Image (tube, rainbow, N blue to C red; front, side, top):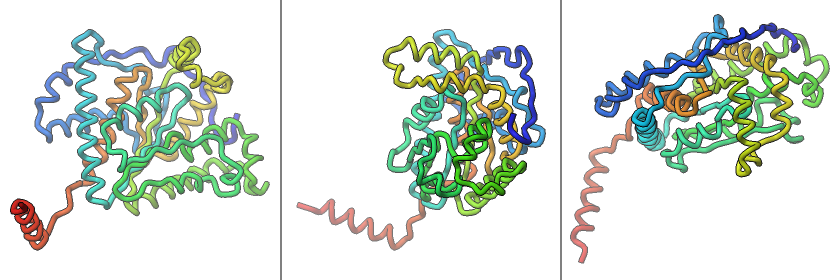
Length: 331
């Protein structure tokens, strides 16, 4: 067990399946933009963590879904599409305004659905205004720098949305579960103290505070998948030849450290959830539900930025009208 991390045992059945009615979705497309935004905010805030002191992961269900008859499935797809379209519109204004940037961080156990969520939720976004960075085991060059360095190189410019598929949080997750990895990080022995994880949490909080003060809004998602659902998805990957490439035996080995990872996730959320850089604990056993939660959270954050297209001066408008007039008079 890693230093400073409390060991807790999960209850036998912490996550009974929850089925939610689609009644709130049925009139969604008929609502005014203001009403949609209010409902979107209310929905996403159910999963938002801004103060981590009292956070307990066991209180957050992994298996929440909407009704699944034919009509409801169509309604869920339609609602997600409305979210994708709204996100695309807001991203266009973000790009034009060129004052803010957004950093979306996705963390999860293997097969939780990070790739699919990114693909579907961001499907309507202009590729010019969005960039995805994935972080695996650090390279030799990256190990010659501090643990935040490799991610800093991929931060989004103003007007853009940056997506981290895994991130610097791996340094308080996989490295914490497998503490022997610290020895390969070229740290001086006296820097590896009993307080190293708390020190890294402090570094991360300060880093994210710095980003926010400079116009980068950080939103963090933990896709909370159950061990049972992960097992099901692993088997599907093995049985589907087209998905074999996604499977690694290492993924199964990491299942043996499930409780340690859950404790590590709980501790990092307790220590790094803030008002300006919140965590969203997303129930991930149902992919459609998870994607609606994620889209709602991003839309909520963008709406708080008071985005608007740049104002054009009277002189510029007059110039544009002259250009239009000249074009119309072309022979």
